[in-house]
Image 1 (cartoon, rainbow, N blue to C red):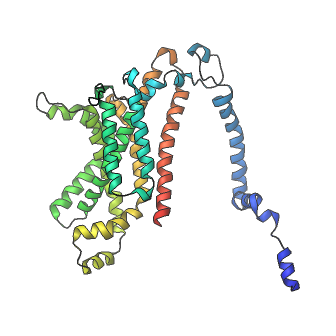
Image 2: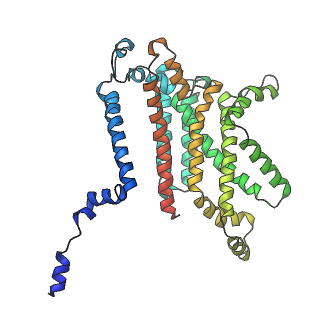
Image 3: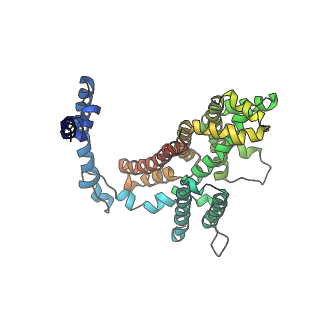
Length: 360
């Protein structure tokens, strides 16, 4: 064996350039400024994380009375454990709360199945239709011997998921239609799309919710009413669709003109061009901003609290209004923030994975 080959095999990179030490040196201490920022960050974490862990886990009480909680230095998680059924399900009848629990589990299973692109087919659409029908039966009742529950009693986590999932699912295709309408060559369709998008984006969601809850019923004929949840759902859909339309329009403008000309040369009509060539490319481009809009829309569902819908934020506020549990808002809103964070992080993580799979 040649001498130079033996020497080459025996040479190893410096310990400070590989492994954990190498990563720390490259990413945290690669310059004077980064070294200072790293040290400041470590000091901040040292001052905040241990006390936070102590407050959450060590000095906390999980199952106790409100009086016992007032004499501790840690968190009082009893405000959650003692009221979790009302927080999660609102005024839904206590003895049949297994029905909304099963409905939420069914929805989560459908979402987990839909994460896998191998299941994306027409059969999945039928599964979703059957699943949503089953959820409606579980929540409303009236069939298969289930007692009927008025929708006014729906609340908590099932209502939050209902407004979010249905709102986002319906808003996205509507936003695509509006984006195509805004780029249409027909003046009437283009002008109507522009007016709708700009008007909706020019007002806050709160105003639309107030209109759906207070003003819209005034225009209905006497004796005709529309469910408050349905009115709020429509307002969320219309609001989110306007923002999705602008994001999708940006993706359409990013497609080269040659793609349209190539489709034309193949003899494809407008619908075929959009469905087979343009939209698949445009929607891949706008995955990050689209998910940002959808995450914001999911968090905006908490605004239905102002029209007296008992979503999970409203049930939490009602719990804190109880004199026995006043003063424990930090624990309550920390728990609520964890729920929203898990949902939003899941959406964000899935979007990153989808980007990677689609090669964008």
